[in-house]
Amino acid sequence: MSEKSITDLSSVHRPIELANGLPNAHYTDPSIFAEEAQAVLFNEWAGLGVTAEVPEPGDALPVEFAGIPLLMLRGRDGTVRVFQNICRHRGMILVEEPRKIEGAIRCPYHSWCYATDGRLVSTPHVGGPGTNTHAGVDRSTLGLIEVRSHIWRDVVWINISGQAAAFEDAMAPVIARWAEFETPLYHGGDDSRFDLKVRCNWKLAVENYCESYHLPWVHPGLNSYSRLEDHYHIEAPQHHSGQGTRVYRQLQDDVGRVFPDFPGLGPKWDTAAEYVSVFPNVLLGVHRDHAFVILLMPQATNETVEKVHIYYASPDSDASLRARNTAQWKDVFVEDLFVVEGMQRGRTAPGFDGGRFSPAMDGPTHLFHDWVAARVENYRTQEKAAE
Ligand code: FES
Ligand SMILES: [Fe+2]
Image 1: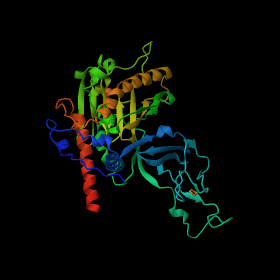
Image 2: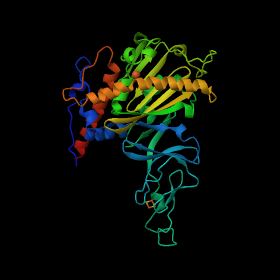
Image 3: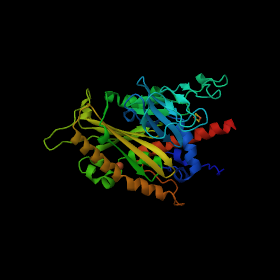
Image 4: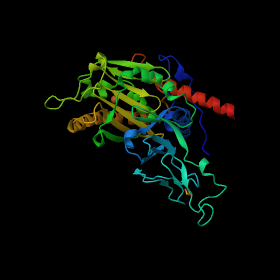
């Protein structure tokens, strides 16, 4: 067993003028990675995927979430559910690759079969050759283990512990913030999704996304029309943080065509756009004419996969304009890679004390650190009480 580390997080909670960021171990130590997985990824509502990844009944997508094998599955009834991707018999992984389930999910080991709603429906030879039932194997108690889930903004949110508040309550601040955007979202399809493999801890991606301070140097292209001073902070303590701009310029093609707007938006959105990190691992962006989701999939202390999905107001947006929009965002997100990867490498320097925040510019970042620290401390208290 590896030694379990305990970090002192008290300085993270100080007022921003005096606070430090999370200690290095929160970016480099596997035991802290595992502790944070429990405290913030499993105990809270986290993003697993989007329903557009399983568009049709029977579509099954295996996804590993911080080490847990899960299965996102659209049932015959059209409902998207999340299950632990294991057979209740001997724990075999059920689905290895994305595929369409025709009929039932058959375990490749001894052929126990599950319906797409999770029920165990057949157990061949379980009572001996030719006998498919046994009094000791009660199928009604051996369905797939379902993970609590909820769909919002096409994101499949999961709460692995089952202990978080109801989704609508837990997410009330951000749902209220973007109430105007509660209109249908249409995924742009294959040209509107991409993954980025990033050599950094997942939290660095959150921290970088929620601040605009870095724009002039990391995103000179964006900054040329939406300047640092056009941005404002978004701060919902203990919940989400981010940044908005008052200057959003729509993408146009050569003849001046643009994407259609989401219906019913107020005048603010003629020129504004907002980018919010919904803690722990979902980064969202909204604009008058498109929205995006970035799911951060933590792989290891220093490895994360960013899964990007872009959405429009109509199901038949122009494909070439969509491709340009995807390319433009990909360029921006790739511009961020050297800083999140550089900060990750910086966290092996023993002299780094978590760093200091600009009281004027780093409020959203500090707010995230404060949230993580509080969740981890809470978890430690509960663990101690349970000992
Ligand atoms: S492990 Fe699945 S049927 Fe045996
Ligand atoms: Fe950035």
